Length: 126
Length: 107
Image (cartoon, rainbow over all chains, first blue to last red; front, top):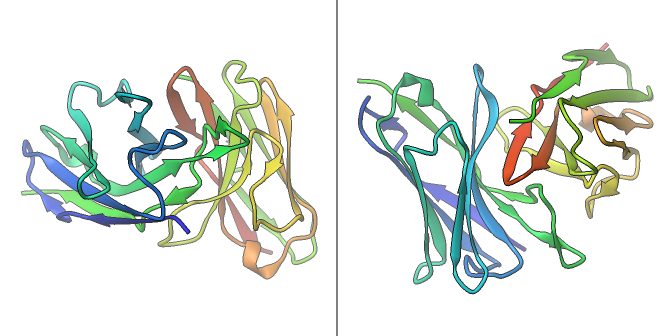
């Protein structure tokens, strides 16, 4: 059974960097049949996909256009986890942040998210 | 980005009712459409992927249909555990977007 467990601060000051980590159990961040995503949810923006990292003989990343200049998602194979860094945050970045897996069904990526972390409310405020 | 428009935004129904939620994409997404259920304070739960494939463990009263730009989630007989919010989600060209959600309330 795949489980994702998130950790990181719930309060970040404006202009600083938001950092969250997602620890994986029951699967591997280096799996060639999964991709590892960050998604956020706020009343004003709804559910918003932020980006992903995945391994297919080398590491790849895809990022949403809306955050592309400010986001980094990195895998950590030694700890079987992946992280989110979002720079130069403003109050608009206040949201519940989720990590999520895109798995496979029948040797094909789902293009949707089958396992989710518990969510972390991050508030951007001084 | 492709925009997803869900309707209705709120739906009042009774136990045993047949419920239908619609999601429209601003351009064709083939069958890359998923449906999620979310309860307050919890992460979304995958119900349907690739427009009509039922995720393992999800009750068969949930079904999905559609392709191209118009998609439907149907609950054949609403159960007490089904009162929640539902979201569609599309995939196209390395980008994912979600609908704004439909809240299913007790009538």
